[in-house]
Image (cartoon, rainbow, N blue to C red; front, side):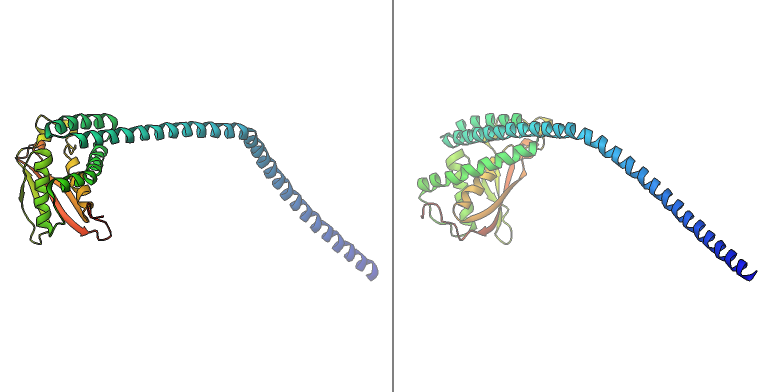
Length: 261
């Protein structure tokens, strides 16, 4: 009887083990089915995306082609604008009297306002044009006056004053020196550049005469001097006079002074 009971117990244990393994297999089967379902879903999504891939690639190539065409046109437009600005600079440089310079300058400002939507861009272009003119104009100034190297910043101020007399026919006053002697103001009671000019309200931020700071910056750079210039009063903006502030920054020792190479 005990042998039968032992055999029965063994069979029970084997049956329990079989049920346990069956449960494990059932769980694994459920996991495999879930994984297969996820894989099938992912595969369907991939196949759908893969089917769209040629269209997406073609769309990307078309967008790239359009952008390249726009870039090419903008590059050509930029080149044309640079050439036009260079022509205008030459016109201004070639104007041998203040009246011709004034008439030419007004048309250039009007053209820039048409070419650029942002007034600040016009201000930058005017200063840049002035700079390019200044680095050429200094040779003419030195030839006319026989001037040599400036001894100090006060000497520079007087030569700048003479330059305005020679090229624009006006004599600004030199005032408001800083205590350190590194800043001064050029004050204009009259300005031929603005004689017949009136700024519309929508151009209130326009620095109409911004070519002048550029001319001074370019000319001074050619004689080994870095300066900055800005307007602090402007008759076009209902100030009593036009005041141009000039500040010495540093000597450019590595440069070769104009006329001394």
